[in-house]
Amino acid sequence: MTKLLINGIVFDMYGTVVDVGAVAKACKEVAPDPIAFNKQWRAKQLEYTFLRVLMEQYRDFWQVTGEALEFAVERFGLQMTTGQRQRLMEAWLLPSPYPDVAAALPRLKEKYSLAVLSNGTPEMLSSGLERTGLRPHFQWVLSADAVKLYKPSPKVYQLALQQTGLPKEEVLFVSSNSWDALGAKSFGFKVCWINRTGAPFDALGPRPDLVVKNFDELTNVL
Amino acid sequence: MTKLLINGIVFDMYGTVVDVGAVAKACKEVAPDPIAFNKQWRAKQLEYTFLRVLMEQYRDFWQVTGEALEFAVERFGLQMTTGQRQRLMEAWLLPSPYPDVAAALPRLKEKYSLAVLSNGTPEMLSSGLERTGLRPHFQWVLSADAVKLYKPSPKVYQLALQQTGLPKEEVLFVSSNSWDALGAKSFGFKVCWINRTGAPFDALGPRPDLVVKNFDELTNVL
Image 1: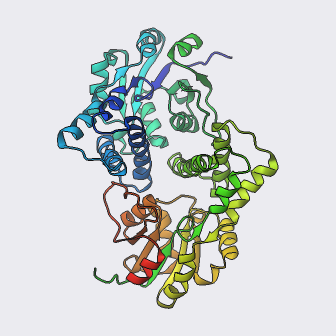
Image 2: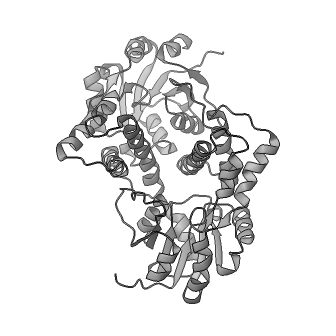
Image 3: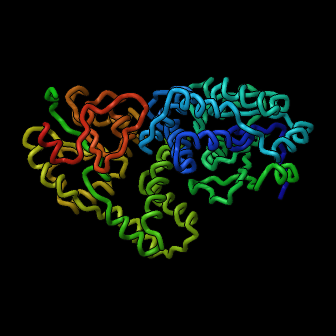
């Protein structure tokens, strides 16, 4: 493969840079089938971001996450106390770094300017990056909340250019979410899809420039 | 409940007015687990409409349906011949009327102007309504394709007002899709959600004015 000529790397946050395993763990407190419950919560959280952009009814990711939680609780016929709700929501503020990410970022930082661009609120991003100790690696931490839209709207990817000053063609966008990789590619970024699970890529047209299993592979290629 | 003061009813098409059971049946030809396969296909079809609006990359519902099919085939590790693909796609042109719908429409038509407003292409809608014999009941058959967006974008619901000339407050919008009922309510229509399966309503804010199990109930209330 030809080397990608890039100067900056923009990363998605949840599921890409940090692991939200704490959320899965917290689900055990309320749901008899915590894996199915968490899957439903995550799917609705994503769907609600899409729906809110389409309906032109933006609310921030914290609120959307709470609304998706309420749907999941009702869908599974569960009860949730105020304390349980709070612990489930707060798990989003307590992610862990993926081991391969923690190892790769210091190396990548030597060669490239690094940024995070996420649908999460500034508070969620700040909490997660402080807690995982990854904050010092990133020159910019950008939230879609600044434009009151969600990825994969091109206006959110545009925010990364506005804030970093990097030209579009010098940016590599990295995400483990197929729809996010697709949106970034459609916007015009060079794209690396982190396919941790061996899933098929979405069939909507543009393909990522790079597909790797994890950050070790990414670092070796760059 | 206070009677709704309405003059027109706008219906969603797939899953609301017509049953796409032919699609589920066609899946048996390619998939060992046709129910799971069909569910994946439908979920991706919906997700791809959302993604294409967000990415500002509209393609019509026929193309999106085909792309979602390709994803499902890859996801399930299946093979599909050209003939099989064609039969799966053509099943979308061969819906059946729900029995309660076929019985209710002639009665509703006596009192209200009726329209269909769907994400489907004009060709898909035309084929489905001719085949089911429901076409004569509708004064208007409207496709989101006219505005190159998908529901729940308010611009699609606006199309119904532009085309029918009805004032917003005199329209009842009827859908079995929670996200569609939500979008229509957010737009400002009076809304009836047909909840055939006893699912919870999406937790994003506005609630439908009416929730009924089927068209018999709807006709009795109006």
